[in-house]
Amino acid sequence: MTAVTYSPAVPARSLTKTLALPALLILAYGVAPLFGSSYLIEAILMPFLALSLAGVGLNLLTGYAGQVSLGSAAFMAVGAFAAFNFNLRIEGLPLVFSIIGAGLAAAAIGIVFGLPSLRLRGFYLAVSTLAAQFFVQWALTKFGWFSNDNPSGVIDAPNLTVAGIDFSSSIGRYYFALIVVSALTFFAWRVATSQTGRNFIAIRDNETAAKFIGVPVLKTKLLAFGLSSFIIGVAGVLWAFAYLRTVEPAGFNLDRSFQILFIIIIGGFATIRGAFLGAALIVVFPVALSRIGAFFLGDLFDSGVLDMSQRIVLGALIIAFLILEPDGLAALARRLTERLRSRLTG
Image (cartoon, rainbow, N blue to C red; front, side):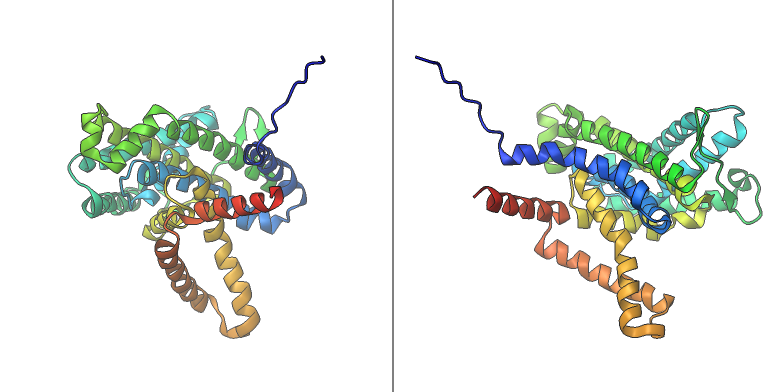
């Protein structure tokens, strides 16, 4: 009798997950830069990458560790100005080391302003992190050394050159940002799926229970602030060096902090994918709104009306997500994918 061997079929869910990441990488590294217009690269993809990375960093702190922060833009500013000064004042320092040093500087500031988390929680912690926003912006404006004594406080970002490769062109800056975002997103995913990530979740769900099972609560909270601020600081470097090409305190105001918070609210807490989905909506939403408004209202839809309309509609969207879909776009996308998969396989 001939033996019959059976090869188990690969589940559709596993196959979809296996193919999703390579498809996204091919789209990001191949299709978008080759076929995308300069407007798509400069005005949409570049801010999308920087804000996505900032959302990933904040999600580690707020989504996974449960520590509310309203000072994300401050840590972005620390990263941007630190990278500028490392590059300016240490002759011959490679740009990669300037960026790593900027991330470490942001992490140090994040840990300092994360110290109140050892005593405060919830709303009170959010208010204490808000102090970082005002303090950092005041310090960068007050002391001209940070901006190389430029009277306007606005400074030009240095050229992006790594290992002799010039990334100063539009496509080059896109690839530079994409590589950095890919590397740090993978790092954040490894943290979230490691014992450290499980400690974050334990503290978020029940801090008292986490103490009883042996989680070092104080150390873990400060680690969450440090890792989050490091990633957000590097996002600030990308925002200033790769996207805006200038560094100024006004670019990292309180509105930017709320924008990053809205990204993880809309995208979904405690999910790496949610940061990218939320950032995509935040970046594309004003463009779509301006096109729709211009089509229906014509010249009446000026920049002031656009800004006010954007705030109103975005606020309504956040309220709707909090009520109807608290887990954000990530959960909605997961359910839609499962429905589509069940129809295709059923």
